[in-house]
Length: 561
Image (cartoon, rainbow, N blue to C red; front, side):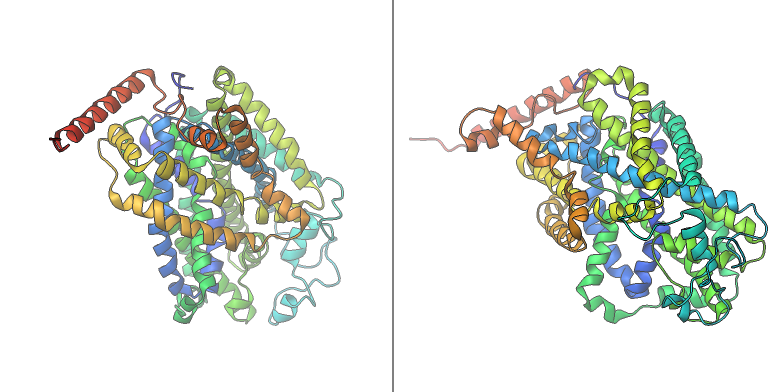
């Protein structure tokens, strides 16, 4: 791998925006606000920010350090410990599975944008051909809808009109063609945006990352000026200190930080690999998690101001209309929009924002797959446009399964299980490879050569002792939701790459089993800076450092009589 030409960002702002686009996604809108209010409101921010600083930021910093130093994607970064290289292939499989369902999720905002140009909005009433006898508009008694006696027009529009959702996972049904064609459009947009690699992505993110913040600001101003908005905001932030005594609240905080920032997915490693070698990425490694968390909190004010308005209009408590996941974005929020002045405008605004929040995540996720393969198999580098096209075509074909009548069930299955085993495992192996087998001295020496500043000891305290424990907790907590053969299959389909590759490496090694393990845990010849000139200076720096250490050792050795 060393010596091959590697793409670079035009400037470091492109890197920062790309990482923000990757970390800040639709989960910030439809998951965090619900978690916050369910786990004690403002009190939840204590475990949330605590885990952010002792867990989230150190993991982001480690991943970006490794990716930048080696100019390596998610596979080649494990040249630091070849025995664990299967984790890189596991990351590729993980992202492929994630894109199968995520592309379908991105089709939904496109459908809503199209239908939002209709007046009145098609989910505004029950008098439509797709509505059932159970359809009831929200007027006052929302509890009979929540307990299943009736359904709302928004719910039936999403599940019956748009998705034609089947009864269960065992009934896939036929293709829902509007969803399919939106999926096609989505993949065409993605390919056109990433076909030139980071050169095109770096320019596009100026709009796709910043525009959602403009929309979020507009929605915030509109939301807080609605009647009942502050009732919803108080419900969101009012602290319930008793919740902090529950271990589940702390586990939810750590899990949200972990899966929101995206360590272990390969995206941060890949984006950092395009940095200029001597860039000091500590500041950006702090900014990215802080902006991500700040966006989540801000989105909570936007969401709950609108939910407070909807609750007041319906005459029910805010808790009756608060939901999480796709239901918040495609059922609850559309229900609130129809109560606003100029509902079409605010509907279009909201769903355009959702689309851009998600499309950034797709850019980086697919680029991490491509970068991982191209960096590991350098002969593909000259054919990267072809690799990108084939990758998008294959991922599109795989995603069609989620465009069926049973698609939402498949989306739920994949989204719940795809990362729960793989991501904690990959992060654990990164820590073992970088901090334990490679060692603090060599890692700190490499960072000194790269940035001019050595690593502070507290980073190693976090990486060696604190974060492994938290990863174990997150893995146990996440795996507790796995269910059924299908769920465990999705959870383990990527992880299986790790033992398979390790067995292959040990089989090809020589000596006893212990000797093979020891040799396989040492960095291979490809580990190190990618650029030849920088690589030579790194080797000279290593030799100079080792000579200085040896001289100090000899000068302090006691004389023998």
